Image (cartoon, rainbow, N blue to C red; front, side, top):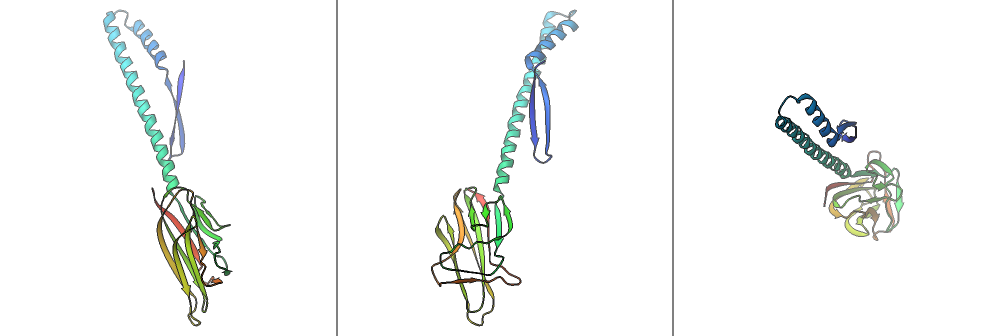
Length: 219
């Protein structure tokens, strides 16, 4: 007897369940044969009525099966979309560095990187989807030093952060938070500006210069 195999994936159970549905035409033939054997003493029109009811039941089950299959496909697509929506990274500098102007800051100590869209080797985040993102970065420097940085999206300056300390200021951090629209495939990074010559990024005992970003929602 010919069978069809349907496979369902339940995301939260992680179990693959398969089952067979009898070929409708074979099932109808069996019903017809059974009806003839069991109801030979009954009027012919009564047998035909029962057979028609059974055929209608099978057709109704087919419709339900198609609807259920479409629903499971929709759930699978939604699960994939939800998974793609989880985009967040946070990285820090692991040591004190000095950078000249127009230098990308490579935050090399990655704390979290869901989706692996941030590259610690070049300091660049590549947006996996178009959407509204939140970015923030913190710079830490010492007395008598300065750090001038800016956030760039595909080489367009979105926001800037400056810290310039006096000789007796101590070690002080500065932070900027920005929300902006980013297209799929856009490159996002922090770099020093053209101001101030050398930039002195300090790593303190309790603080590190850092860079983070997360997807708020898709557009």
